[in-house]
Image (cartoon, rainbow, N blue to C red; front, side, top):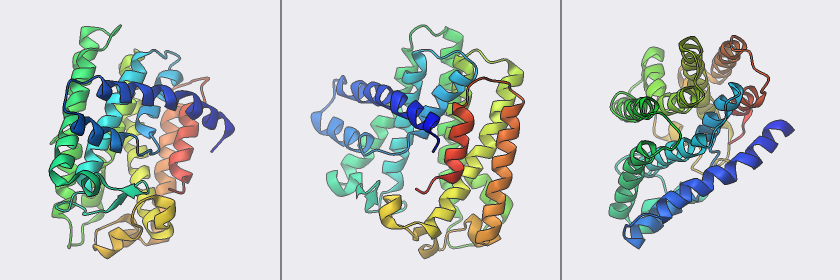
Length: 294
């Protein structure tokens, strides 16, 4: 991680997280529910999705406070997906980010409901955005519904489950991860562009960038599942191999997966080069995704 990106993250993350926690703490809801929601929100993580919102706005030289609110909202969606992903009926994981998973602490019913609450709250947050036009609010809500729902992340999760215990083709695997992992990253990147008033040409380039960085993110995850340890990853290493899931290394070999990772990284950077900027944060964040060790 470059010193520039490290400084950027140290400045931005506390603001994003304070917004996120306050939205939950201010709810008129059962204390036990808020405790379960906050448990997973406060478990840590890379927070790359809200960072992408802010980095894109910085890239377009138009950062606003709305970016922190949208960043908090998208991280809630991501956290809900992890809570549900860890359930016995899904990936059946006992640890997430080095801590017991939500259902291990609060029980399955409470974990499901905490996830449900973190899935619905962000839409109300977007509807109440200040200093954002009505048109932008509607566009953000529409885009989040599309990328988080049946046409995006949830649809990708279904394809992932249906693909277990059988060998997917590379095209099928790309479709799974374009939706399961890439869709919410696309929301974060395109939301930043919407808030910053990007032109349609710029938005199209950011969508293309999101496609490549989303696949790069998942390929790196697949590689880390083989090369990383449980302690480094904060979750069970080798789980994909043990469950016979189709992964990029399984289809392409480990070296082939690394070549594909480098290809998507190059294409992601090429998209950014077509949008001139004085900000380095987005390019540095791209490299962080590619080179991370957890």
